[in-house]
Image (cartoon, rainbow, N blue to C red):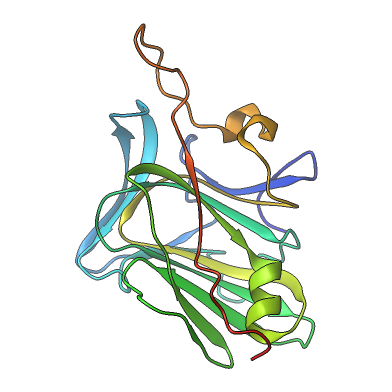
Length: 210
């Protein structure tokens, strides 16, 4: 298993704070850029992924194609900022049939398409910062009628500002999250100290047992 484990309930595979946030990731950039910057809203480091084509600018984990993430936890959470441009991410899982399935979620996708080894689905983001929750076990069961075993690979594509990517054993409320997993605004006399995060779930309109 790759990443930083917190209490055996949370596994972080990306955090924008630190000396080497992309240590486990590989970068693919074409007509775009991947760089760390300070977000004006949270006044902290984030990773900005920008590209003219969302399919050609992205980061992927693990950085060795021969290795697997081998993450058993079924919930994937991506904390990101909506840049009001097309955005997508893709996760590859292994099921109990020993088959690898890809789930591709995109803001430019308008309908769900399930193929034998790939499922494409639409995703909507709110303005500003979002917390995208993706139940891998549920999607695997609904799309293919099989049981989720582990996550093999994860790719985050343009366009977004990325704060953290982690796995967990279940969906947690904001109050249940460890302190380092919450996103805060700087203190101001006239505003709340914590940023309002919207938990966005990817469209679950998937035909069952394909």
